Length: 456
Ligand code: FES
Ligand SMILES: [Fe+2]
Image (cartoon, rainbow, N blue to C red; front, side, top):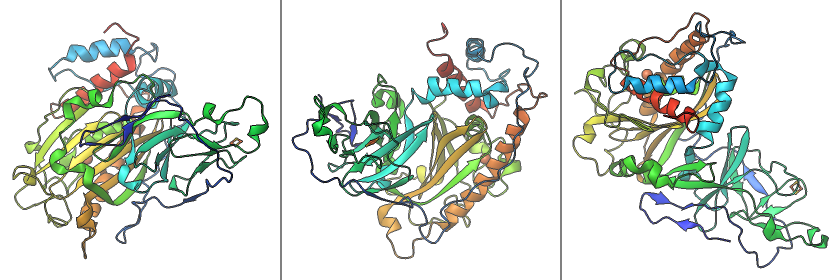
């Protein structure tokens, strides 16, 4: 038995949950684990449509057996890592990943083991779980997880698997458990810490003890208002993962921001194509006629250039106070920003599931979910201070519309790229010197894929 390790850091909320069995002093006579479910908290605010889906192009049905003229193993990651390390700091000579990395089911399965089971995965905003019993269900790696806020205000994550006969207990994407988590099959009932509280008739079974059957716990932590989970029972502490960027967003007070609107996109492209597209503005002048004059690629720089966090700022052009349809702020500047940050937009990627884009008056986030080799769900949120959202007349539409247009422009070229990298004609092409973050992404990705398999 153990107690959860309480985080005291101001940037943290809740706990890093360790696998544990809580003592149970009494059993409840009546199961009350029913739930209300339905629309997630941040949807359909301010009269905007809550859900959009991107164009669904049909991607070719099968991979050619030999890709790019390369008949070697799909898992030549060690060679790829070596190549990537050979690139070193120099940009010239770096090339895009081979085609199988974007379309092979074997690579997809390897990513599950090497990346999505080992890294901290963002599953949503804690502000969407504001009350005890509020939950979201996160699907990943063929598994399902319940993330719930407990009566002590902590956020915990459990496998969505009943300890009786394994039934999936909750199928709605989000909602509210009134008092308990109850399995719909035989009414085994768990509290929000995962302890089994009631198992009808099981007291007649010799040796049965509810203490032996808590829900299976997953590591979870809340940082800057984002809920992260990690399926690796031996994962390093979250702080060590985030060490280089732990306080980077304090000035934007991310923990205090809430989603004023969100949009979910289904993009028919591999998740890495989406990451790479976000990580360069080489394409901006052609793909984004609206965005290009707002933040010129000539002003971009990067302050994180290696590892799991990449990116940096772009400077707003003189005529624009922020990125919005009319270039004007939606409210006021975010409190606490220096003059320099009032004139910048930052673009950061968090490997492998999150983009954070702080603006002078809001923070745009993209949360990435792999759906298949060649499809990705992207949940976009526009975050503002609660007090701004509560103001009479507050309307984020001009920020939402600007980025919705820009997003769709991006998804279109991502889907076109997905088509191309699946072609037997595709072979790795040379990166430009405006794509250094893609080289860094590839290097980190390949290292993660090869970890414990190569002597690197
Ligand atoms: S499978 Fe859940 S109570 Fe029986
Ligand atoms: Fe773009």
